[in-house]
Length: 347
Image (cartoon, rainbow, N blue to C red; front, top):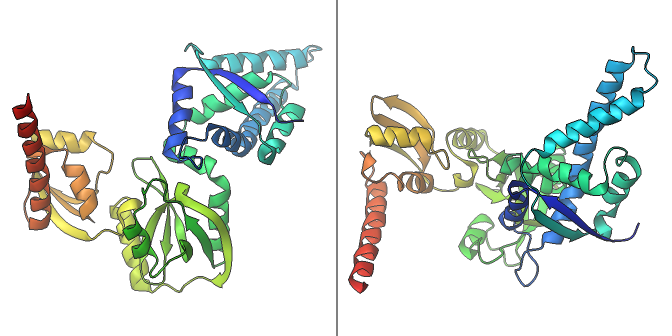
């Protein structure tokens, strides 16, 4: 089977999910343009076995259900039920967006497997449409775990074997700052890391998955999509003191994994009715309150997380006991006010 070009017509929802993930998971070429072809091939390669398992399970369930029926057209009935199920999955949304890509040699085995074993009920375009629709319905962090399935398997294997991992960090367009890199790996001049993996954790907003690793001194979070050239080290993992283990478990319980390397503070915040409504409604980056007394909420959370979250609240949230957070929010609002006044004067 040679590399070939494919065309699949998709709904806006499925098509836009795929295109957004290409950017979200940083599938970029050397010139920083998006690499759609690599992303789609890797998605099919990693996800087709999951879809195939569902197809096999559904067919086997039907066979089991119909085995007691003396029906000469049993196979035809099974085929028709599966076709109807596939038609149902497509829904009523119009398939107006054409996705084109070329199969590549590295991932060709997936296309061969599909063509040899799973086109009994569909043509290739129908099969791919079913696969893409299924993928698009998952949460973003679940989709990320599919795309980076092999990297996550290597990390979990290293944890099981009590080994360190070695990898490089792709900084893209300086999305990972040199300060962040240096802080996470002291005196690293080669961008090569050899660290102890602690685990893979999803952000509570279900957007990204993070590797939490220990560099011999502290724990740090890292987006899975930034990991490149990953392999298991021959070195055994660093031993982690029980106090540090208790601390990291406490941080992960009270905060999103991406904020664990930021300084944590104990803060009281008073919310008015609008603020309470916002706290219930706004889920992204929401810190977990460990105590609530009427309209006063108690948090033990990262300063960065608290700032990012409550900067959306305006005067519906009042910081009661932390001047650093108060001043940071005040400067943020005042800066916005100055920009509004400056732009108004230019009109």
